[in-house]
Length: 544
Ligand SMILES: Cc1cc2nc3c(=O)[nH]c(=O)nc-3n(C[C@H](O)[C@H](O)[C@H](O)COP(=O)(O)OP(=O)(O)OC[C@H]3O[C@@H](n4cnc5c(N)ncnc54)[C@H](O)[C@@H]3O)c2cc1C
Image 1 (cartoon, rainbow, N blue to C red):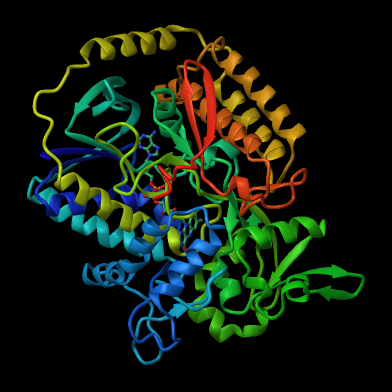
Image 2: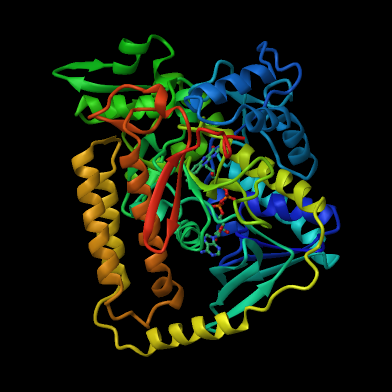
C-alpha cells in the first residue's frame, strides 16, 4: 500500500504510524490534540513482558496462560500467543528509542507484580510509564515527519468512514480551525481512537475517549464485539475532576485493602483469597469491594517511606495534591470505577474489520483481553496491534483509482450548517449527562435484566430527544454531530449486556450468577437501519 490514514495519536496510533513509515508507507496521523494529550500518557503502572533471565522462572507460556485465563478464555489463543511472544522485543525496542525504564539496584530493568499474574512481569517507568512511552514514540514520529513520510494533522475529529461496496477509502474529518468537513483519501484507514470512557461520565480515563468513532462505524456497518465487558478498576479515588486511579502497583508493592468494623480492620481480600488476595484480577477485586457495602481503604504505609518515595512517588503526590492524604502514614479511601473497555471494534488477526482496508488498533479494538484485561497488557496490546496492522498493510496492494465521496461531503456539510443555524435552547451536554447517569446506574459492576431493560428504554428516549433538540452552536460542532453516534454505541453496549445471560469475567449478572458454557464465545453485534442484532461467535470468526 502507498498511503494510510491513522485516526488517533495515542500509543496505538503512533506505533502503527512508525511501523508503516518504516515500511515506506506514507502516513497521515490525524487527531484533535497532540499525542501528549492522549489518554495513553495517563498509564501509570507498567507494561507486561517476559524478558530472558528475569530470575523468577517466568516463561512466555505463563504470560499466555495468565492472559487467556484472566480473560475467562474469551480471547483467541493465536492472537494472545503473538502478543506475548513479541512482548520482550517491544520492551527492547522501547528502550532503544529512549524509554527510560526503572532499574533495580543492580542496574537491570525492574519489574513488579500486577493482578492476576502468576509471576512478576510488569516493567515500568516510575509511575509514569505511559508518559515515557509516548515521549519516546513522539520522537520517532518526528524523525519520520522530518523525512516527509509521516504527516501529522492536528485539530481533526473523525466524522465518518468513506465506505463503498464493503471497502474503505479514507475518512471524512471535521476540521476545528476551518469549522468544515473534509475528505481524506487513503489506501487504508486505521482507527486508533481509544476507549469509550465518556459514555460513563466520570471515570479514570480521558473525556476524549467518547466512543463516537466506534458508534458511527457501527452505524456504517462495522461489527462490534464484547461490548458488555467493561473493566472497573477496583482502586480509584474521588476527586472533583475525575476518578483518580490508584495504580495496581500500590497493591503490587504490598498495599492491603480493608474496611473498618467497630475497632477492627477487616482485610477482606486476604481473608477470602489468602496472602495474594489483594492481587486477584480486577473484576474479582471490584466485585468484592462492591459486596462489602462499606467504605473501603487501601493501606500501603507499612512498606515504609523509603520504598514509597522510590517506587510510588506519583501516587504519593496525587494523594497529597488532590485529597491531602499522606500515604506514608494514612490509608487511601478507594472505590471501583469504569476504567477500560475489553470490547470495541471487532477485528480479525491482522486487525482488519469486516470492511476491507478498515483496521482498528489499541483500546478501540477488541481482540486480546477476552472478558477481562490483565493490568499491564493494554500498553503492550497498543504497541503490538500497531505493528501487526502495519505488517498487514505493507503486504496489500494499493487501491489505485478510488471512488469520490464529494456529494456525501456536501450533504454532510449542509446538515452541519443547518445545525449551526439553529438557535440553541437545549445543549447536547444535558443528554450526555443523563446518558452517563444511566450507564452508571443501569450497567454497573453487577447487572440484571430489569435494570438493563430500563436503561435501554431511557437511551431510546435520549435518541428520540437528540433528533429533536436545538443544538448548541457556541461549542465545537463535533460535540453536536457526535451525540447520535455516542447514543447508538451506548444502546449497543446495553443490548450486548442484556444478551449475555451468564456471568463471566467483568460481566456479572445477579440473575445469572454462573458461567454457562453455551456462552463461551464472543458477543458480536451489528446495526442495520436502526435494528441491533447480536449473536455469539460460535464459528470463531473474530476469536483470532
Ligand atoms: C489512568 C489510567 C492508567 C492506565 N494504566 C495502565 C498501565 O499501567 N498499563 C497498561 O497496560 N494500561 C494502562 N491503562 C490503559 C492504557 O493506557 C490504554 O488502554 C492505552 O494507552 C490506549 O491507547 P490507545 O492508543 O489505544 O488510545 P488513546 O491513548 O486513548 O488515544 C486515542 C487517540 O484517539 C483520539 N480520538 C479519540 N476520539 C477521536 C475522534 N472522534 N476523532 C479523532 N480522534 C479521536 C484521541 O485524541 C487520541 O489521540 C491505563 C488507563 C488509564 C485511564
